[in-house]
Length: 85
Image (cartoon, rainbow, N blue to C red):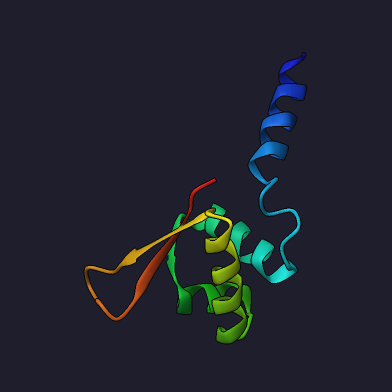
């Protein structure tokens, strides 16, 4: 297997658990992939999706165990989301 084939296989396997999710969840995952850690409001602003849609996408991603969330130290009312795949 060439290096290109290995990289393509790793990339495909990485996104396998996200493949069958709704487009909004895929978009949120991709934005988290580029930005590492974001709040729900930051995700809504970056994706231009309504907050309710971002909430639904995050729920679907959490069900697939591809997103980790934790409380923000600077504002405990907010959660920080990180992609784990």
